Length: 236
Image (cartoon, rainbow, N blue to C red; front, side, top):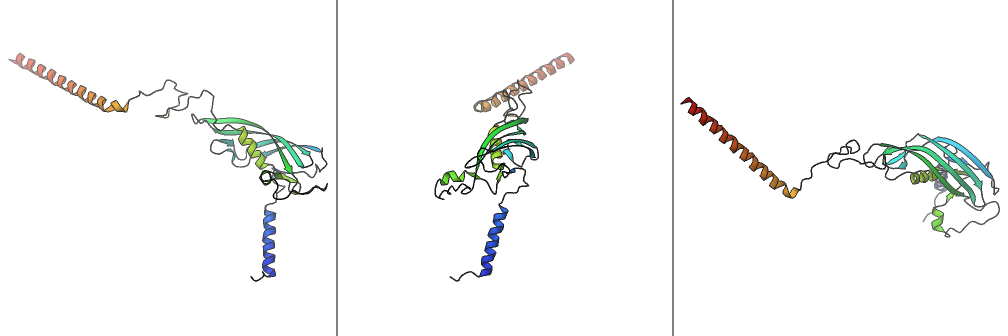
């Protein structure tokens, strides 16, 4: 195989560099936080308060969630530890959805607590060696890392909000829901019902109805004949 030319190698390096830059955290993102002021001294602490606009699709899809752009209030405590930065916080917001029984609008106040460790990505300044790539591979997949002293709170926020929301929200605990046959709200008309008809007897009921209609017709015909006969007698 012929070696790649210098121009192609340079292009590959540029593409890789561009990809790396594109995946870097943006400090302008309101859910990205800077830990440089906190420092790496274990025991250092910093408290932060921030109100931001909710990102899209925050909640249980198709059921209940915080509307995009709605205010989210964050109270955070950042603690410097040996492994990284321990973030403890509270999220407050208002969620909207619909009752799974009667489909009426539902509002819920979200007050969710969370705690997450954001680890240093490599050996720290104290000379601690990096773990081997093969060690604890499964744990590494769930680990969140600091990137140039920044961390992204969005995945943590999403998990906390989803866990705080009901998977089957109801407008009230004793909601009666909708009539399964016609869709009428049973909350507005609790006495609403339909007469149950056994389909096995439906054909017989139709025959009975037909016979009753025939008897009525016969009775009507007989009565008409009697009236006509009486009228003829009077004329004579």
